[in-house]
Image (cartoon, rainbow, N blue to C red; front, side, top):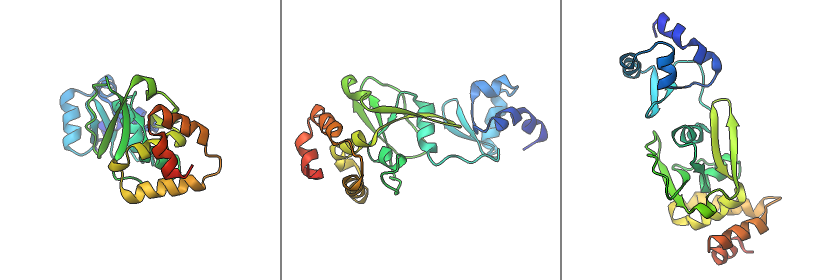
Length: 201
């Protein structure tokens, strides 16, 4: 990377975020043509329209970088099901496909650099048990473990068999599981009987 380019990017590098937008790049003196050149040179990784990662900044992506990038592309999207179970430590195996929830009315494109399974929710259930996680590189939304286990059962056919079994086995062993909240959510989603059967409630 040329010295002049490094100097321009230094404030963003110093921020520790590693992510940068087209607006920020234009604001520190890059032209659209220069941004295209940085992409061609392998200095930028395109995350989505107008969102980039600084490849040679010396900053490493966090473990939850996929969730952070989902949050940058669509701040209203929520990490759900097996992906939420992984990020919250219920399972140690990262699912091959990132599970996300959006409102049925959400028209955001979700073309990511990794595989995504998108689930559409009605307004009445979308924000139930939703948390916001903050990191030095950005925020993302995620459902709590109890709701996520219930959603794994709802979307069982979309989840790898070994991952699904890990979720269920680990949840059964988990201390402090909020079973009443899980059952209430399962009833709301009309999968109460199936949830009780799989979890042995």
